[in-house]
Amino acid sequence: MMSLLSPRRSIGRRAQDTTGPSIDALPRMRGATPLSSDDLTLSVLIPVYNEEQTIEFIVKQVRSVSVKKEIICVNDCSTDGTRAILDRLLAEGLINRLVHKDVNEGKGAAIRTALSISTGNVVIVQDADLEYDPADWPQMLQPIIEGKADAVFGSRFLSGPHRVLYFWHSVGNRLLTLASNVFTNLNLTDMETCYKAIRGDLARGLVLTSNRFGFEPEITARLAQQRVRIFEVPISYSGRTYAEGKKIGWRDGVAAIWHIIRFNLL
Image (cartoon, rainbow, N blue to C red):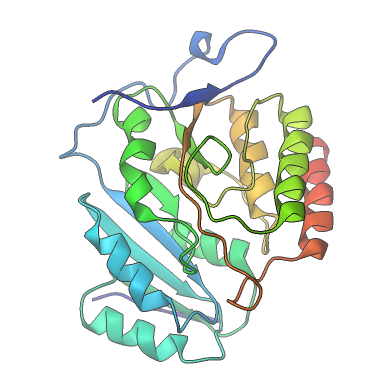
């Protein structure tokens, strides 16, 4: 059960197949026509679980970015003060649509809920934990605006500034990306990134089923299977420690291996 409330030049690199016909040679069902800035509406999908310390700040960061946008928050049955803060932000007009879930289902399920009610011609997921900076959006959106890309991944491993934290998390992310690339035949550097800007019609047309952190390998596999044009651009990253509220752990990494196999082969 849940309740819905509502009141220059491109930068980056293309992630593509390394064998077979180039993606540019395939029929361009999506992304062929450039978007003007006036035509762009960005749907910002914010899954939220127990983020009372950060949610208001991140919403205000999102609103500060100079792009036409709708902000959709999905509260995944938070047990702290998150719900009351979100209700106030909605009443103040700082967010556009708000869903409260009665059962905690996971990040992937929250994103799917937000995606299903989005209307923008580009969508992006924004974590509520301050690890990703909305100031990176303009360079991510540029390849889509120019009609060169259908999806743009923000890579934490392409020379963007980042907080120095866990070595084994970095190793794990790179290994998961490598495993994903083996199955998708893409040359991504950061499959697990939260920042994936995708054309809205494309994103809403994907069949997605993951409830938890399997969302990232699933949506990457689905995009690869659609043979769309994917770019990567460098982004900044300020990871949290577990003391600061980081939720993903080693069990999620192990599960990600299964998700990579499942969504690419089964």
